[in-house]
Length: 612
Image (cartoon, rainbow, N blue to C red; front, side):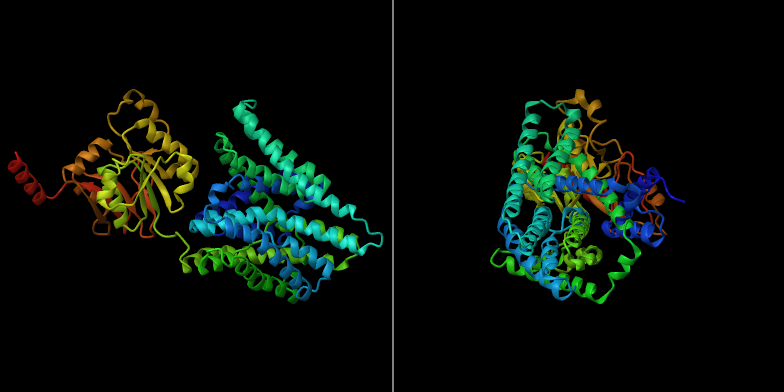
């Protein structure tokens, strides 16, 4: 029974999000699960073929989705991130790309058996990695900032460059293989590329100006950007295929660097749309493949080509292009290994397969098979190896979940010490140097700066931290911090501490309903917590067992004790909050703030009497 188009769309969306959820739940590479899901419902079981279902709309949908994904990725390319990394990224995107083009073309000719002309075209295309595959991998693997930024910038910058190189190579071979040589075609290509870059910059400046002046209302900003992105992609791409990607990349980078205040307002929305599009497109492409193409990827020439590209071409291009850039051997090794190909390679190669065959190059018929082989093997190999390799090279931040604490005071310093004792990375952030004296004297890592400022965003590395706790003396500020970081950390990982009485006490009822979750299920304020620290209260760890259960612990605990968080044997951390649903079990370690022992109380009483 043939499925309706509506049912196909529903199935694609459902499987895409299910794949993303399974990847998150079991810490697996999302792109691998999406590819396997598409193969299962497509060529393996023959449930659907999106290319046939969508018909003439299939290619435009894929193209527009790629443009939006590339634009969303380029929105994160702020030049301030390049501090100390400009040289290696520039080298990789220029020298590295050229080396990869040459070596890739040689490999395609000698290993895959392609003619020089076709190998020259496909060698340019296969330098791409792309945000569709790099971003999900970076989202799941906690890399240190330097290699993560290099892979992100390379993936977004090189994507349009690879497409343009392939188009340029095709124009070159067309020019030299026709009898009536005319340089106007090559000139048109260069002019179209220059126009695409300028047009993208122009669209970015115009939309940014309209946002700042107020010509576009808030509710229309995201729809307006979507419409302009499609316009910015389509117009240049209609002139010369492939230049649209350059245009949307230029537009995104322009918006990211002109400093418009409303950029973050629609950036999170774009990220959500991008995740949905990546999920859907991977399912569609994999499900549209034919079984014979899948079987062909295991032929000797295809496998040889893929292995040479993975183990020789990529590492060699990275090591040669980054000589003298200051990258360590470990960073070169990681970047030289990670280069999964994705949607751009699949979609553009099918376009070139068609026009090259029409131009008389019959060997171009295997380009789709060759591309899928490279995409599938690199996605699987790099998806599963990135995390372990990063750990082996000491470039990973994996380990105990980290905690970012906003506000330096006696309670947060002692809380930070308890995190350090449990093996979790922690950092206290405060804009007051005077308040930071508690962190300095306590020997706790700290950062002096305003957590909400743009400067802090680029100077402070927040990758190691999974939770954020706002514990300052102001209700409104704590709620504002939680609201700001909630899209990045998630609602369940953002907490605030009630300061007690502050100058804005009249607003307490309002701010209690916004922002993050309130830390501690007990009715205890920051003032009281600081007072208890001053009275000698200590943080204690208690391990639950069969003989000493959670119920036993609750019965024995002092009435003045405050439950704060507990740690699972797997390292997962859960905080006590007003809406906490997970409860501690056998083997869990509970950390609580408890009164001092009787001996300590006696000593304190004697000191008070002596001082009094």
